Length: 408
Image (cartoon, rainbow, N blue to C red; front, side):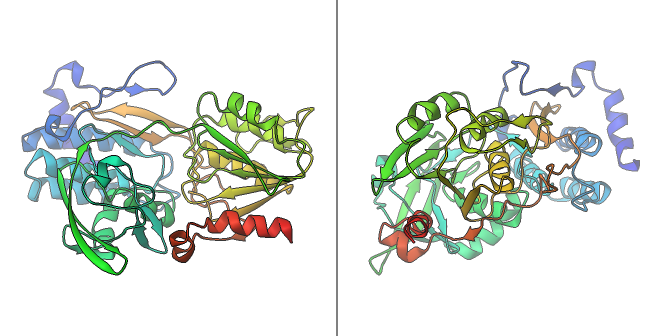
């Protein structure tokens, strides 16, 4: 605890309003996001701010022992950087992103405002970046569907990935890589990117101005019937309203002999919703992987064969939903391993500067069947990845595999 002496001395010199407080997700308090420019400007204030952040993380973060992280060594590395190389608020903000990424957990987050956005989130396929149905904004700067991004600001994509992965945390290496790739058109410090794309064997350099970050609200669920006998429901969130929307779509396909449930790209929400959705899909009772409660099939629960599509973006409450279906031994999982993090009780805190951050507080647990709830992705029964060849031809590799499996 020697590295807190400086912090405690500074704390004694500051007013009581300096004290750090927790803000719980369910207590109705809103988060006031701050930008890099609102971080401390002088070195002593940065040190005090960082010391306080680290004290909270050291005392509260529940997973660092499991992950083999030495909190004293982590502090020494970053406090040395603060003393020797951090000069501006941008430097300090980027350093904090690295610090939290080094906690190696998908539910560790910082909440900064002022992020600039290029209007698209690239797809990461076979360690390459592609545009998929880009919107009007990015098309207006000359980008087109299925452009391959080969360089950003003069750096090849592999080099850019190697340099930027340090800013992105995750519970598995696959999740960190995916988060890094998905951020190719995001920046806290740049307002213009120079992007090189390959299109029909032509190499094209395009400037991309970045604007204020914003994403459209995704659909909650989507349903369709494939080949007359196969129901398909994509669930895009485990947030509010998903069970009600699912129920309305389920009624039209519940009598079909096959059902594909697609939770690829589902970043989670509320595990209670996953619990309730399992009641539609299980044929016999099962203990929920997080709660000591029994999932009981509904009277109109599905009686046919269920296939679940998963991938690395499948995260948090969507991941606990996947674990329950996987452990039921009644559902066939197809795709790629999930993100490897169901939550572990994350809570919000804020620093002297007003930066809100989130860290898990619960000790690592296992499901009733012994599967770790953090640090390992749910393995599919059939590991299938999207291929570049299929993507360029407009084919969903994982869905096509599932349809072929059913037909066989």
